[in-house]
Amino acid sequence: MSLPPAFLDELRARVPLAPVVGRRVKLTRAGREWKGCCPFHNEKTPSFYVNDDKGFYHCFGCGAHGDVIRFLTEQEGMGFIDAVKQLAAQAGMEVPSESPEARARAEVADTLQSLAGRAAEWFQAQLRSTAGAEARAYLDRRGVSATMIKDFALGFSPESRTALKTALKDAGEDKLVEAGLLGRSDDGQTYDRFRGRLMFPIRDRRGRVVGFGGRALGDIQPKYLNSADGPLFDKGRLLYNLDRAGPVAHKSGRLVVVEGYMDVIGVAQAGIAELVAPLGTAMTETQLALAWRQVDEPILCFDGDGAGQRAALRACLRALPLLAPGKSLRIATLPPGEDPDDLVKRGGAPAFEVVLDAALPLSEYLWRSETEGQDTATPERRAAVRQRLKAHADAIADPSVRALYAADFNARFDALYFARPERPPRQAFVRGARYVAPLAGASPALRSRGPGARTASGEVTALLAGLLTHPGLADRHGEALAALPMSDPRQAELRDAILSALALSPDLESDALNADLVRRGVGGLADATLKSNRLRFSFTRRDAAADATARDFGMMVDTIAARTRIELELETATARFRSSLEDSDFERQQALLAERVEIDSAMMRLAESLRDD
Image 1 (cartoon, rainbow, N blue to C red):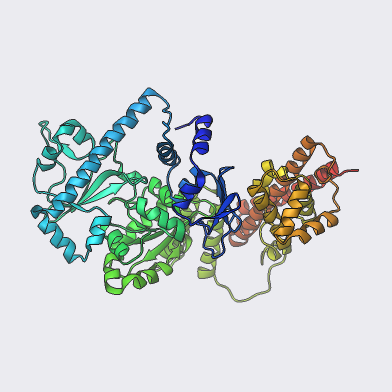
Image 2 (image 1 turned 90 degrees about the vertical axis):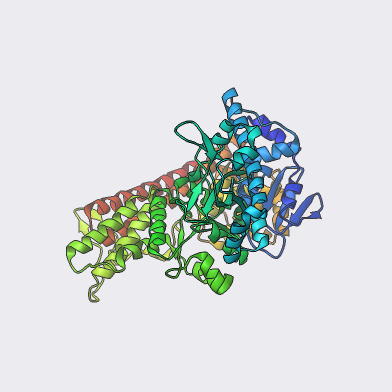
């Protein structure tokens, strides 16, 4: 849904940021601003500031920055539209609808959600009644406390085909069917969908009831039954308990995915709150995306039996095409025959923490699943293992992650199956007139430096000098400059201090910026940078035209970023060729070597064209 920029601007203007942030962060006055401990990373000394006048927050510790909408999406895990709707309701504003059809769909959803909420309250009342005695006895046997029953709004559906239909008869049978609360037989008769079951309300990210899961108490199949998919409920697009676990996960940096409702509740009762569960199905791409909105590496912790481990592997394979830099999974394996609820009953939260601490990275889990316990006595069987590993790597869409997985699998495969006696390292050789990096390791430049370390410190010095001279350059190019790896930690420290200062006070001029840096303890670095800069580009001169400085500064940042990317890809390609000795990998390495030569030449030409004579 696309919203008019004017509406969003008005919303930000009407809703003060500090009260919203203050619901999660203890803020104190600091002049015209508020300060507190950052909710995005653990800290003891406050470095998180909220500026109501300008409508943004900023952390000088981790760099978190945004407005009131972003705070709700990043800190509370809400979707953009959900955050806008919540703020609009607070401000007394109506969210514009895209069309009459969209408005009609929203009205239907609101009506159905209201019915689901009423049903949840009715189910809770039934659990407390005489009819709910068997369900209460079951919860007592499972050790579920009264507090958990209340917190998770557990309920009971009586063994009746018409009890709920009668209780909500004013809504009309058609609406109750649409809400997934009634079923309809072939002859058109309606009946209560849930009968004789312990009821688990399922909420969306905003905490609204949108469906139910029902567990049979007697010998009824299926054991678990969900609301029917419809306009309100889609089991593949929801995670049980995400509304409660999401804010906790944002703060702790950990989200754990378990199999069932009772696992979530049992572990929460032991004191670990950041758990969610899929709704009786394998993890879907949408559910993975929901988990990644909360943390970068969710932990899958499925049951230790064969079915649980197969479910974990299916989730891993489904995640492969979606992997991106920094976004992955970890997999925790429970003791055989135990689920999370059993484990915490036996050993409490510490026993579960031990399992989580031993969680494997996704790449390690896939490697073990394909190599441990496999019969690899023949070349054909080893080839099959290698083919499966290659298929896993090939499934990854992101080229950099795919290349690194392939290189890792190839190197480990060769080390496991083709270990050879020690011998002198093979030297670089020539095929025709083509150069190949040494097979015993990466080229000296790459071996001694991490990716991006070839970024020339002199050029970075010029960029920093330009930023000190023309702070306004950060408006357009600050994000790209922040992403540049810097091999000199002093340059990185100065760069971060400059961008932090300008994030808090975007209108600082050069002299004011330098004074601010002195207060931050990096004034000496700033002075040394200005004095040591020997590359006289247009953006390092105070009297240069604004258009020229912005254009030339951007060209320099983009060129350095391109060279950083090539260095990373060349390191990966060299490792891959060293493992495979395949012509295709050789050709890729050669192409990247040529590209690096070209980018170095382009950098020299750019420097010459920008240098002030």
